[in-house]
Image (cartoon, rainbow, N blue to C red; front, side):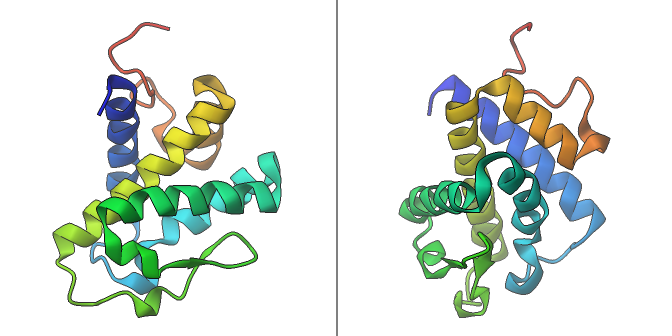
Length: 144
């Protein structure tokens, strides 16, 4: 894992921690992927429904290599994760959380690779204005 990927992972961890504190203290498949529904309108506005769907699908493929249970998730025509009820409920909460983190990390890394850090952070600040301070950055150890 290179430094850029590590920084994106830390950003994803902060976003997930923030969302978990607000909405769902227990990770259940029915609500656990709400975060992707929350960001989808912002991503779709920028890149279109098909573009976001393809980006999320690629992130899902990459995350599924590390967490095979994610391969049971599907992306519907609206670009949202669908059929989460088919995910094995015997997955440990730690593995479930780690898989969700991996999926978000891959999504953010892909977005960062496509549109750059500045636009990625602007988009994330639109979704989470509460996190829009100096702690929301991809390259934490670097000065802008």
